[in-house]
Figure 1: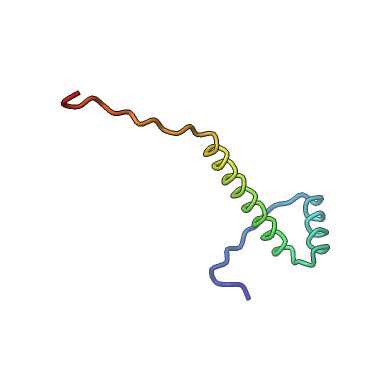
Figure 2 (figure 1 turned 120 degrees about the vertical axis):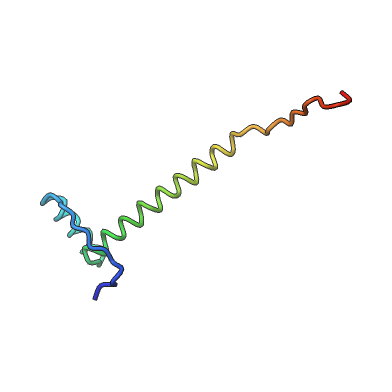
Length: 75
């Protein structure tokens, strides 16, 4: 029985897409729903890793900030 918090999603696939997904799910020993959830998790992980990599790349090329002191009283 499905979790009451699960959301059912209807997806339209071409016949080729459906048979490809069905074949891949079978070869992985997964249900079609489990396989699609697996693909979603893989893509989410890939995007998160790309975002972290981009942040690290930007951090690596940052130049140190210069401290600028404004001339106050007595200067």
